[in-house]
Image (cartoon, rainbow, N blue to C red; front, side, top):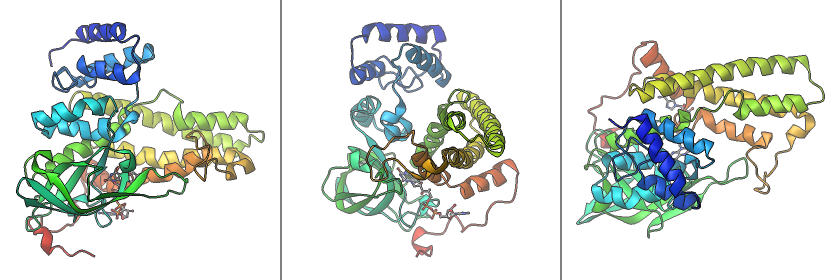
Length: 386
Ligand SMILES: Cc1cc2nc3c(=O)[nH]c(=O)nc-3n(C[C@H](O)[C@H](O)[C@H](O)COP(=O)(O)OP(=O)(O)OC[C@H]3O[C@@H](n4cnc5c(N)ncnc54)[C@H](O)[C@@H]3O)c2cc1C
């Protein structure tokens, strides 16, 4: 943690000079080798073992030089699976997987949710049974973003059905192209297919691909899910940009300019700014190493706000707002207001639903009594399931 901001700045200056002629992938590789992919990771594995706050020095210098490449090139890999492997992986796993994650040469997906286990992901039913030096996996995952493009997946599976639900889980790295792994894309209302069903039928996973100890999968998943919240709220956009910026632009372009619309727009702009400042505050707390329940509160607020902003933006289009570009997957563009409105509906579900966020808010901020639940010692095999 002893690396100073000046030392990080020097390393970035060196990276920019040495990487001047490199394309994006090669530049990202050099950034990883210089310990600047994510500065809090260990040296040799993309980091400098530095205070996470030093990442800001890297990001702003690369941004200013036009060489900052978004983590959305490999969202599950960079946002969640990479940081999980950095914490729980073996030395061999770190060497094999981290660099191509950060260069985005190998995409990753997160194989947690199942048809019967989303909010209650610890109740999942996909089984992994040990057979010598490998595991045999059977079951089904769903809503697996980018599984159809991924080389690797981080799988959470049940290895001991007789243990309480949180204690019988184990995490594995799965080769998404191996026999017994079948990916079936799901078609969304926008016309796109960004997530999938994934079926496992006697898929073989080597024990060397296990992440963390047998039975400790819940703790591994916790690392993944904490990083998911951070990556969802992590990048704080400049004031007035993003969806609220699109709403302001739509109002300016609108010919009717009704006072009711202007009032709604002003109200939403203020709410967006309050959330942005809240996110900045949460980011500062995280960088000091004290993440709190504000992640859930901000996630709840921004998901609901996103739906209201995109709704108004479509309204401001007048009759043209009823047409959604790319509904059939043609000419799809994320700046299309109709697509943004359709996409915003997932924001109150993905990364934890609004109801689950409200429970977290009630219990952890307001101090309300905890939700009644099953005895945490009940074996998973004795919990009723549909
Ligand atoms: C765009 C998108 C991308 C996703 N990507 C991935 C991915 O890559 N990998 C992955 O593993 N998963 C992914 N998911 C799945 C996501 O994590 C789940 O959809 C989410 O956790 C909710 O689970 P569920 O859909 O099974 O709903 P359920 O948990 O069945 O919930 C159904 C309804 O019941 C409510 N509910 C459930 N439990 C409670 C409770 N205790 N108290 C009050 N209300 C409750 C919920 O709020 C919801 O309204 C993605 C989802 C979306 C929308």
